[in-house]
Amino acid sequence: MDKKINDKTDIMDEDLYEEIDDDELYELVQEERRKALEREKMRKHKSPKRPFPKWAFW
Image (cartoon, rainbow, N blue to C red; front, top):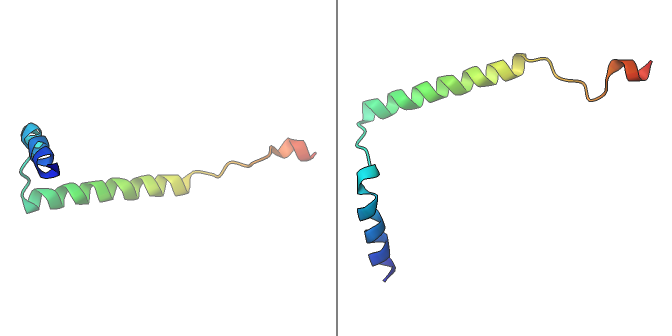
């Protein structure tokens, strides 16, 4: 019975599947990896915020 439900779900969503060849998939992965590295680099270069303001200690 569960198999029939899963088969019907796949039939309904059949138009959502997209065929991607290996080269295209590789390019997409490399682009996302590059974006993730850029985001990480930007996050590291930001100056860390202090938990308390300096003037509070004076």
